[in-house]
Image (cartoon, rainbow, N blue to C red; front, side, top):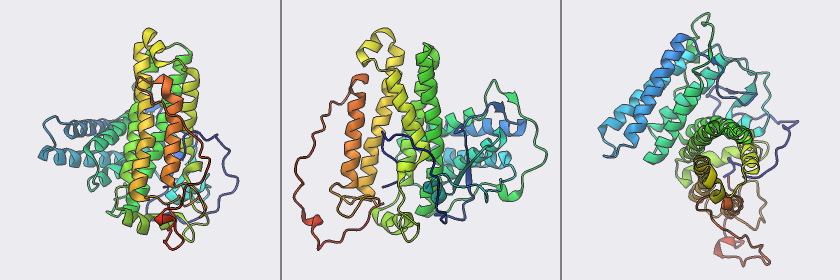
Length: 405
């Protein structure tokens, strides 16, 4: 898979030239993400939007309770999901604003072009409109997805956190909208095809990465300033968001390997696009990885030492690092399911390692970096390979070698 980048790549400047391509799903309206990477608001929305936000949060909270019902998932779960879908749909419709003319907006990376994403300076009203629509589409698709209940709950809990950030308790009221939004601004009604699922869940994944990066950055600043309560809260929120984007990753891959190979992978490589796509340039995840690197640099005390003086901070940090480690582990799992032993579509034909092997190495690098900081760190030693592996049956020239996305 090429959608999610590696954990420790240095930030780079935006691509100076982006070859335009048709989006994977051109019928989905372009999503405009804030150019300042901020997916929370400083001002409170207008009263009708605020009421719809509250109702949507309540419906999502009830849905989460049903997903995690100790007695099991019964008929009430479907009712709660339908109610939450309706509630987030009403929010997106209520929050709708006049769409931005995106024709002049240049995608900053090829991935944005492919997924139908642009960035621009936006006000809080536009921010609420775009993010609530992204959530409404993702939740609507969840009705037909075959996703583990715990992953569904992780997505829903992250949605609640994101929506609460759109209506700050201490924010000044926003001006009332001058007129009703045009009808065509209603949320895109998702279909039941896997390519659509792939695209809309990536939109949610991008939003969650930006929110997680912001939460981690708040935690780092609070730790540097010795503000314990703020640090603990931000670390806990970051862990919720990381588990949310891990679940969104699994949600996006809810398809068979045959379907992925036939319907999704070809859209990410020539001739469908000018060059094979790679998640290595994905700016939203890069922002999160940068924030995590700063966190572990500022908060470098071993777990036992930190727990002795600040147990709440130590535990909250441990939960976040564990969630981040599980994210790369589950990336391995979904890649194994959809791609198997093949290389990534951006690897050369003679690449010695499969996509899974590369991801496993990335996982081990991350585990090594977190070892002393976690309660139950994984002590991994990465041993360089001194000789190439002998070719197996699947490596023979006679065997077909499909390119992997």
